[in-house]
Length: 387
Image (cartoon, rainbow, N blue to C red; front, side, top):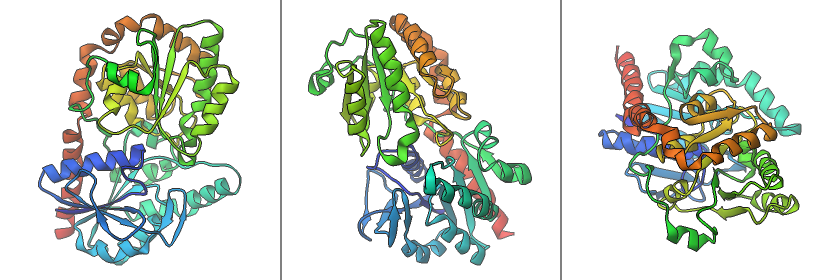
């Protein structure tokens, strides 16, 4: 099959949505399908990013954050058996809806990655879009995919789930177990980034630090770390990620008096990221709202043998409870208690996660299995269109 994936962000931009599409496309190519990715860029050149599928990056006519208007892609969609839109993608999603209405014989799949939330005028726009346009966009899709039923039934897409449950398929995202697995920590990595004494219990965060990822809850984590410092708990926190908010988080850590404990290492290359997980005694995902729908980083940590603590959010908790625990959203005091408990037993982290969890990761969350489930959805649509 020829499959087009349309997504607002794609590697090397750091983010879960783009990374998940990257891995899915790679596996679909391994299975013999012809793929193409359409995303935002600086030119109309075809570029590569370690994947055989073609990556088309188009300079948008209009752009705000990860929203963009790139009508250039419309002329190519007729060439594909399946057009797979990854939502949200403001500026493009409604254009794809219009294309589908004009081409009902073409397959249209939509993955609902997450809700969008904001404050002030931006928040009002999101509310309007969700109420008016979202049902229309989801309504024309031949199949809808969510990472978990738990999340979809509490999301802005819930109304469509209730009215057309037969359209929905629940397929989790995956993790590359060839990249993420338990191994000895890297001394060279610690020296290169100046991370200090490796014997100190280590807390890890991995995530974007730009406006688009405001919901990651880094403020919540910093407040919890301040409590640990005040209680004279021995720890170091490694913060992996970059973006326009990174400096403000560093200033907050300084103002809280925990700068010596917290290492902001910025963006790290793909080949280095697994080594950071293997420095950790516990991984934290403190997201503050349902813009966080899954948490691929939780899978990466668990596959690396690291226990996790995450916010008690729909979808996220489904993953976290397999390899650790959850805490009430935004409650940094409870988070600090959870961290202290895990750090007190940091020497037992491999036992805490357990070999049975490693088995679950490989069986349920391998990208090969995830891609096969997508292939089944695609094939059902193509077969239906041929009738």
